[in-house]
Length: 384
Image (cartoon, rainbow, N blue to C red; front, side):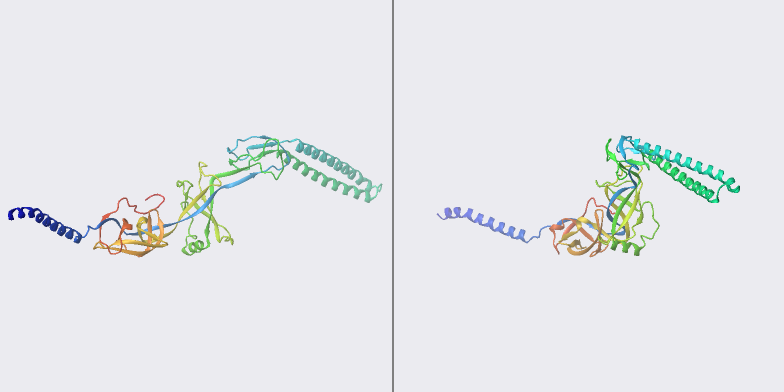
């Protein structure tokens, strides 16, 4: 009987021993700290970098000519093709010449009448001179003839000027381009009555083109004090970024500053010039104008994704030599492509967390690995 009782107790004793061992192992597991989190880090780079400024600009032709007729008349023909390249002196439109032709013929008739009157007074003067010497007529009659001759000569001159003007009007029935360039779509139709106030079309010279943009009064003062506006203008000062984000391959130069600051906007107009050999750029386009306005010496650079923005306050996570994370507030400067210039808060050589910054907190220990595919800075336009 005693042996049977011992037989039944043995499994329970074994089970209790297993449970005690399992509890001891769980207690040891809870006391074992988890392995440190792995994060990607990048070293703070210190070097001289160019600082860019950007402005919204609008492209315009270097010369824009509104084509207007000099005389009134009905439009008979449009000679050119809309949107084509035209040359200086090329015929664009022809007007009904009958009105100007009639004015020309009237001017010719007036000149002939004035010339005949002059000839009559010249004959009188020639005939009166010997008669005065013979006392056959009075001196007053000769003086009247001389005055008549002078008035007739002036009338001839006036009639000749009127004839010259009538010839110009007759020629202006043919409307020609005053410049070489690209002509726009006609704003009138054949058969319309046009006047000297009517704009028939517009021709623009597109090589080079102008780009007009505005800088703030503060920027103007900064550039004047730094000497940027006093240095010699170069052909590669300006860069043009088009609406699709592409960069125009030809760099331009700043031509001029406007006379005064616009009091309504507090900005100063600037005009840049870009060569446009293939007429790729067209008037009315908008583009970003970019230029180097400063060389920042010994700038501290880190990837933009290493910076956390907390309602306008910026911070980075720095990993020390002991692997501990320190969350530091930083003062950010201008952005340079995928990098950010940091004005204060970090030092050259510090390692900042690039990937995993949202998962760490101040004081934790992490394991670091170098971040992949980091940009090195340089010109954001070229990707250098």
